[in-house]
Length: 185
Image (cartoon, rainbow, N blue to C red; front, side, top):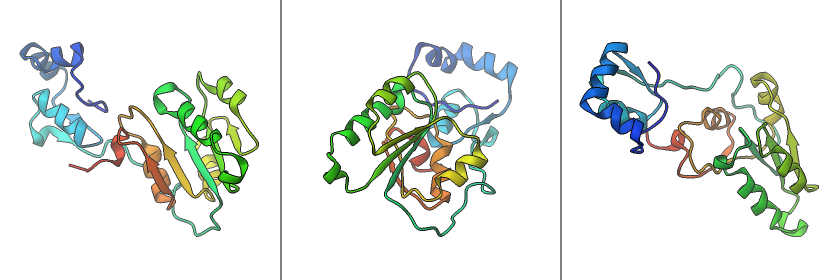
């Protein structure tokens, strides 16, 4: 069974980590596949032995996302669902708080879909470009020249996009809630 969330003490998680929950989980699976250290710790709380926990659940596609020496531009890139917990509204507000001179030709490129798309379109300026979700092949080619990848999430159970853009050699500007940026096992 795959597990990509971490333990935060919800009622459901508390129930699953109890004796009853452990018995139930043992009936439906004997191994857990997790992406990182926080999920690994949750698997231990669920009663799984280290030898029954498989790691590295998520990984970027290195055939699509790879380092290519290109002339980097003054572009900050956000790729993800346009939802509140990803911090995208805060990023746009912060970017718009700088005037044209302070921005010094930097652009904010947003790629994704979600419930905040319309409100972000309203806040768009000459230096903010918004694009719909892209399939990985197109996304990789479209994003090679950006300099910085930014993911200011308030909660991010993993974030494969971090791996994808690290492979491309981007500077990573991430909140401390992006778990794929945290220490490994």
